[in-house]
Amino acid sequence: MENQNNHSKLKAIIGILAVLLIGSLIYIFKLTSDAKSLQTTVVTVKSEKESVLKDLSDLKATYDAAIAENTSMSDELITERDKVVKLMADLKSSKGDNASLQKYRTQYKALEQKMQNLMQEVEVLKTQNQTLTTNLDSTKVVLEDNKKYNQVLVGQNEELAKTVEMGSKLSVTNLKTASYKVRSSGKQIATDKASRTDMLQVNFTIAENKIAKSGDKTYYVQVIDAKNNVLGDKATVSFGDQTLTYSFTTTVKYENKSVNVSEQLPGKDFAKGTYFVNVFDKGELVSKSSFSLK
Image (cartoon, rainbow, N blue to C red; front, side, top):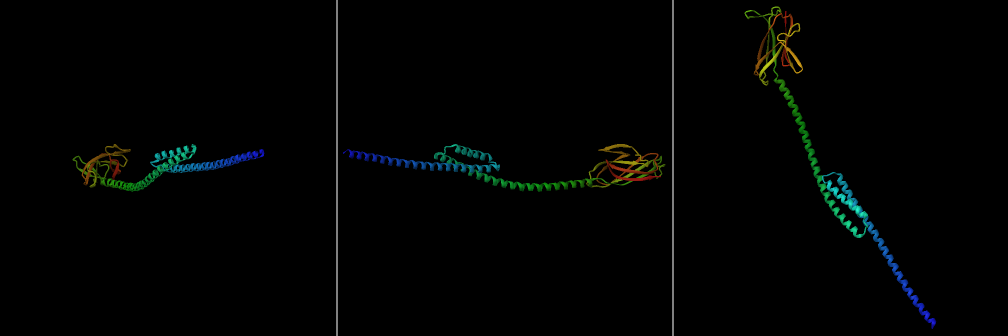
């Protein structure tokens, strides 16, 4: 009887142990499954975080390249790039759970869309700038051609002005000098003897010139004797840095037609030898001749 009770107790203990063993096995299996599930979740979250960071990094690189082109939209591009940089910093410091990753992924999508819109605007600007540059280049070519043409015109005008200036100068021709003995009656007797001469007569012609300026014209006449002395007034006048000593001046009213000029230079004790006569228009020598007295 006692042996039967012991046998019953042993069966009860074995049953309890079996139940406990089965329960332990079930608990261990559940823990193992949860651990695997958690590991898988951690790996997935880490992979997703790295993916979002890479996408943000690519987005930043796109902005950096666009900013380097230095367009009129650079300020707006910099602002958006800074948003991307801030989001990357926030993501790196986050715990990286699914909820926060979803939030960062949503913010990335919004930034990506904004970037695409801005890049379209940048492309439009680049196209417009290219067109403007082409137009400016064409305008520059036209301006350069006009500049060269104007330079040619200026050169031609300068040459024309020089030609007109040269053509408008008056020519003095037929410069001749005669020597005379003047009697008390006023009669003039031509002579080539120095001892008999007491008056020289200088004659010249101002030629006709239709394009010259009309009006009073003054000429300075210089007569130099055989001893290199200037006869007559021996007056001095300056034209710039040039000084002229002359014998007399003559002023005529010029009206674009030929004018004959005749002036007398009285004197005494004329020397024998060759005399030189020069006619100046201000400081410019316009005619010269010579004669001799015996």
